[in-house]
Each structure stands twice: as structure tokens, then as C-alpha cells.
Length: 239
Ligand SMILES: NC(=O)c1ccc[n+]([C@@H]2O[C@H](COP(=O)([O-])OP(=O)(O)OC[C@H]3O[C@@H](n4cnc5c(N)ncnc54)[C@H](OP(=O)(O)O)[C@@H]3O)[C@@H](O)[C@H]2O)c1
Image 1: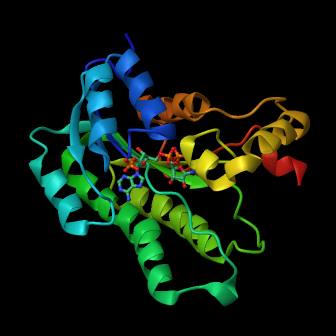
Image 2 (image 1 turned 180 degrees about the vertical axis):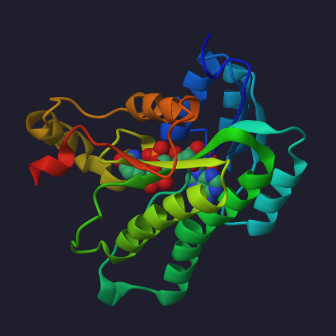
Image 3 (image 1 turned 120 degrees about the vertical axis):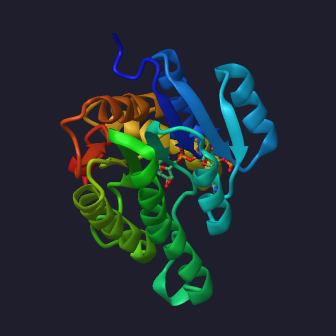
């Protein structure tokens, strides 16, 4: 029997990219889905395709986030927090009010979600966060995303310790071929894909389904907590 069969899986930011791929795989594994996002049309498509319960939820709205969890009517088994992409930019161009909002979103929102999950996810169930491998070391324009990367590692470990029996893990992705990557790269997307096919040890570009498969494993394997699992096709080895 599949580990997720009959489980309830909540995907925050589940209408595109990694979140949508995870929702699709969880559905195929027999889970019941609760999916959130900001765009009504995309939520309707998910509802129709995956027979999911959906809710409009902007993760920047903390009151709405609290309300969403309070309205969940039964214990859930697993939660994935996906959502907004990172803020890139050189230090001398930082708008500090904007940066404060970014840090709140990328640091305090995962902590808030972990706290909400602690009371509502069944013992041994899981929360999975998404991080990245690209900003573990310094680089031009990476100061804010670097803070987010370091902070998410701390949140993953400390929440796993303090909020047990909730299990908390993170996946750290390199380049993943999602709508977010397409938006960030614009007309340089195909060039980047070609470069990755040439240089990555796996010889292909990492897809949302690759990351989703790892996330489903983290949900189903109850020996795993407090750890970050890299999935980058070997990108960090190539400089
Ligand atoms: N793609 C990569 O290469 C990569 C690498 C490392 C880490 N990551 C991280 O992985 C996560 C998912 O990335 P992705 O590439 O799958 O992104 P994506 O393709 O843009 O999908 C993001 C999903 O989250 C929703 N979302 C975005 N902002 C939101 C907000 N403020 N409130 C609620 N929902 C929101 C989107 O729907 P709506 O816009 O309709 O709300 C969509 O369903 C992000 O945190 C990203 O930083 C991505």
C-alpha cells in the first residue's frame, strides 16, 4: 500500500511549478489534496484536475494564513510550503522596507506555518519546506536570498526538535524548470537549459517532478526529520 494513500496533503502554493507537481504526484498516490494559491483560475484548474479542495491564500497575509489553518476541519497528514521566489539584488540597491517584507515572508512565514502545523498535523506527519543550493555561498546579488537560505536551515532543524512529533524537512533545489525560472530568466531560458544539459553531471535539466518525487518520499518516510535534502542534478559540483 502506498504511504500516502488516504492521507490528506496540504500544498501551500500548489498551482504551479514544484507545488503543482507535488500535488499531482500525491493525487496519483491516493492522497486527498488541499491546495492554495492566489490565482482563482489556476485554483479552478487544480480543483478540476485533482478533485482537490482549494483556497485562495496569499502567504504574505498572516491573518489569512492563520485563518486558513484554523478552518482545517480534521488533522492533516502532510504539508508542503511552496510559494514565492527569492529576491535577488545588490546590497547597494536594497530597499530596506521591501527587504523587511521579503525576510518576513521567507523566514517568519515558514516558522508560522510550522507552528500552525504542530497542532494540526497528526503525530509522525510532516511539513516540508523548500530552500535552494545557489545562495549557500556569497555571490553578487545574493545577500537577501543567502539570509533566507541560512535561516531556513535553522528553522528546519529547530522546528523538527521543538515541534516533534511533527517532522520537519526541507528540500534544497538548484535550477528547476518551473514557471518561476522562466519568469526570472526571460529570453535567456533556453540558453540556460542548454548550458545545464552540457554541464550538469546528470546531463539534463531538473524538472518539477524530480523535486516532487523527493518531497513525496520525505512525506512518506517517517524516519526523516530535521534535515535538508539537496536536489540539483550535481549543479553545486560544477562551480
Ligand atoms: N524553480 C527553481 O529553480 C527553484 C530553485 C530553488 C528553490 N525554489 C523555491 O521553490 C519554491 C517554488 O518555486 P517554483 O519554481 O515552483 O515557483 P512557481 O512555478 O512560481 O510556483 C509557485 C507557486 O506558489 C504560488 N505563490 C507564489 N507566490 C505566492 C504567495 N505570495 N502566496 C501564495 N502563493 C504564492 C503560485 O501561485 P500564485 O502565483 O497564483 O499565487 C504557485 O502556485 C519557491 O519558494 C522558490 O524560491 C525554486
